[in-house]
Image (cartoon, rainbow, N blue to C red; front, top):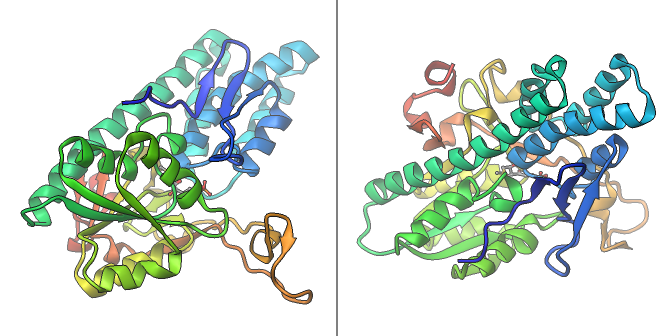
Length: 343
Ligand code: MRU
């Protein structure tokens, strides 16, 4: 197995991010030393995926403290800089949760902040490993077929999207390690292609058989009976199980419901926001219209068209067969709601 990827790493004086905007053509690491660059990296998806931006935000507190020391900032200026990191993207709650957690150590100094950020990173990897096992156990018990599984996924939820191993892709990796996986259908995930660029890249590294398919192919693949289960990650899960994830996820969930195929969400409890009652209260990031009107810098839609570019959609909890967290599996559509079980 190749060495485990670290999308986010602390080098001692900088934050090393694998630049996810240039994969799979190039594997490049960006060394981030100041707050403006970190905010820009989060916004441009150099680092992306809810748990990975949580880890980047956690180390971002240390980064702001170091920059403050270099540039003679006041305490308030450092805290204002941290607030900018916290708000760099609005939907994934992990960013706010992880920054707030590390901020509780702010007055104990840089070493304490770095230790807390390292704990965030370590705990995320452990959570992913636990989810992998819980999710694989559940699928093997509940799908009830006597052959390796065919699993569909949307967006990228692997090592690149987390502190390591992955959430939904971690479950898929665990199935593969157990010899229980036939093939993965990886939705390409328009408009920024996290599926075809990043998930497929990780699957190639792991030697996991897969097809990349257009997002528009997913419902047909599911309805034709070619998929045993779909599993995705999440950016924020409301108390009632409504789940914000990469745009296109709700279509996968609807097709699964129609076909009677289990639709699973795998996410650490840092993604569960019990303070948010329903999906209607989740702030969905609207990204620049150029991402849907252009391809690789070339205009594809006619001049005069406007673009609608929500980065996420909300899958109603009634369509979520099961939520896999590091604490176990909740059968959400059967009434096991995160707000009751995880608060
Ligand atoms: O815009 P992105 O690439 O950050 O969106 C990522 C997703 O929607 C992922 O599915 C989600 O963050 C879970 S990552 C383990």
